[in-house]
Length: 266
Ligand SMILES: [Zn+2]
Ligand SMILES: [Zn+2]
Ligand SMILES: [Zn+2]
Image (cartoon, rainbow, N blue to C red):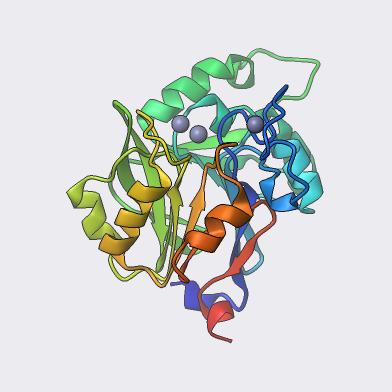
């Protein structure tokens, strides 16, 4: 339960889609916006659960995110899936190995683990090396909940185009980044939420991502107390979209920190 932690929060490290916002070389009004909330690093969140820090995904911007937001420890990493925008920052966990003097537990589905292992072949090479490599302790999850930092995490299967990837429910919060739809059996696991994060790439339909309108429909089904949209492309200007959303629904932005559990009720 989240109530066990005096302080718990979800910190948005990146609210952008795979190329980030601004997109390299683009001069559109979102990419050139002066609003800090339109600067979106690749998608990731950090859960602060009392003294523990649980990272969801290691984006290609992870080093910058860790410096930017003063992350000084990582107790575990959870992976939603193995797309490049969610895994490519993995090498930058090495300083946490140095500081914490231990392996970092990582949690992934068998499918995601297979890709991570192939992509980072040098990391899992057991031959001696003169260079440092991330030191990780892999744990594979299936449908059953697993425990990290005293908190139970329920994997939530979602469709991401033709693929099946995961979100996570922890207490009455859920983080569902990349998805195009949520199957009925997963919707059932998302009742009674305080906070939910949902993919909302843009307005126009996309084969692998939910749109603002589709995610608003999900919000109407789930009726969480608060919903935050993430994995946002350069099609959405923060202020313009935020102004049109219902009061309980918000556009996430980098640096947004949402108190949860006991911290929220104070
Ligand atoms: Zn993604
Ligand atoms: Zn642009
Ligand atoms: Zn993806």
